[in-house]
Each structure stands twice: as structure tokens, then as C-alpha cells.
Length: 327
Image (tube, rainbow, N blue to C red):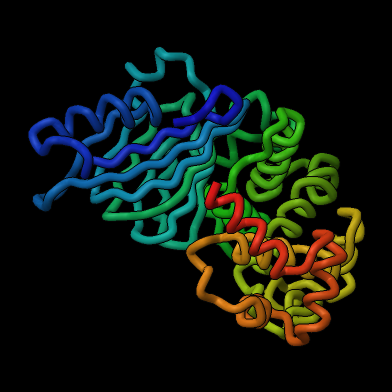
């Protein structure tokens, strides 16, 4: 449950519902309230759906997993006046989509822009994916000839799509910033990336590349560092090759963020070590094994940097944590 200061978070799974009410509740909650669509399962197999939606001002991020369905934005539903746009990317499965007299077949790895202001029909196999919903007024200044962008398949090889998917996935896995200003910055970055992915105007594209795409690249690299923190070979060269960038571009991203690549890696490792040392679940692990497990190759260097960072040795921090736990 979100607190007053946290963005609303909706988690919905048909597994949590009585089988006899599963379809009716899903159509009401996910169909009419969240997606604003008429949803109908297809096929003879058992129906199942999971959805997690996080709402921010002018942005809703959703991850979805479901069996085969047909979803329609009908003429009757258009009466709600909602004209949001929805950027959808398919992780697995496939779908056929129709809107504005256009028809497109979308396989895994492809993205699609859909208009809530127009009738649409989407028929999908069992699929997983993500959607990003944005008010039309927020994207109109960034994208020229927006109406021409709907129902056009966008391959994930598109750099903006690749950055957008990794940025959205990272946001799903981490607490969002506490301040409205930082949340607004995240929303702006997502808007920028969507605009570039579907075809921003030249001026807007230049701004978005400087703002949203750089932020997404940096976020993706930081998430990759966290995932690979145990690797001793973490370097700008290794990370650059993984993110299709030059080492100098990686260094520049961190410099623009007010730090350096090596300082960020060191600080993350030290913070991670501090959490593990204080965690009673790792009480049987020696401090040296923790240091080596998170990428430190020199124990004396680890101890020196840890004391400099936290003002006490790792063993002192562990003893203090134990005393606090014992009350």
C-alpha cells in the first residue's frame, strides 16, 4: 500500500480471485478502470492475468502478463474523453492491432504507439509486456504529425526504445525519489524517450537527446553496475562495450552527474558492503568474504576506504549493528 508521499501502485493478479468471479472483476478493475478498454479472453484455455501499474503525474507505467485476449477501445468507451497515448512494447508473444484504418502485426521485441482518442482493436496471444501511458497534451509539443505515428511498428533496435525499456524496467525495481521535483524529472525523461522513439521534431529531438536519452543511458549503466558489482573487471571499457558506447562517452555521463565512473563503483560497493555487514542474515559471513564477493580484490584497500567512508572499521560497524539489534 502506498503512503501519502508515494506514487499510487496497483498490483492485480487473477490468481488472488475466486475462479467464478475472476473474469468479471478483471474486466471491471483492469478493463474499465485502468486500461479503459473492453477486454475479452479468447481461446479455450484457463484465463490468467497479472498487472502492476505505478502512477505518476502525467505518466503511468505498467507491466502486464496475460493469456490470449482481445481488447477494444469502442465508440462507447470514447465517451469518457480520455485521449492519452500509450506506448506498448511486447516482451514475449505477439499481437495484431488495428486503428485509424491501419493494421499491424507486432512480435516480441517490437513497440507500438496507440491512441486512446480513437477506436482500436488489439488481439494478442499469451504475452508479456510493458506499457507507458502519457497525456496527449504532454507529447504533442515534442512530436510532429502525431496522428501519423500510431500503429507503426517500432523495432527494439531503435536506440530510444532500447533505452526506454531498460529505464522503465529499472524504475519498476527501485523506490522512486521522495521529492516531487525528482519525480517530475523522471516523467520528463520518459516523455523525451517516447518522443524520440516515435519521431520527435528536430528541435525537440535535440533537447530530448540531451536530457532524456542521457539520463536513461546513465540509469541503465548504473543498473548494470549494480547487477555486476561482484565482477573485478568493472571498467568504463567493459561497460561501454555492453552499452554500445565509447569509454569516453561513459566517463562523460558520470562527469555530468557530478562524479566519476570509478568513484560511483567504489561508493556503490562500500554502501553494499555496509548493508551486508549490518544484515543479521549474513552474520556467518566473514568481512573478508563479503568484501571479495562484491568486487574488492585488496582487503587492506577495502578496510581503508570503508573507514574513510563510514568513520569506523567494518568490524566496529558489525558490532554496533548487533548491539542495536539486541536492543
